Length: 159
Image (cartoon, rainbow, N blue to C red; front, side):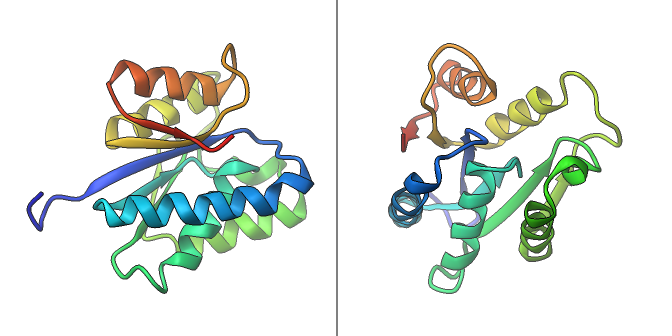
């Protein structure tokens, strides 16, 4: 890998994570991001959904203090993605966006496929995936992992 080349990871996971599983998942994320960083992965694409996405983004932002060239790219499926979030999650979302290295907004308005378009975009940018996938038959995380698999990308599932 030359100095100008960076390796990227797409983050994907379920929106609901049981409260009691969150501390362990956070530790697993710290370990996964740290290990990936040591292998040259410095850029992380996050779809900014409630649940795994925002937890992973917060972990990356915390690690940026230790891992100097770590980058978080927030990929928004449409402009007002957080409109239906709780007030708590809206604050988290806004804080993450304020600290992200870059924000990519794919559409002005919501459409039926906008989340899949976002997932496709992240897979196209990535060299690997870190996921939190419990179901292997349906849903956005399943779709993203299947897409990544079809592109030959390695997937680390933290479930």
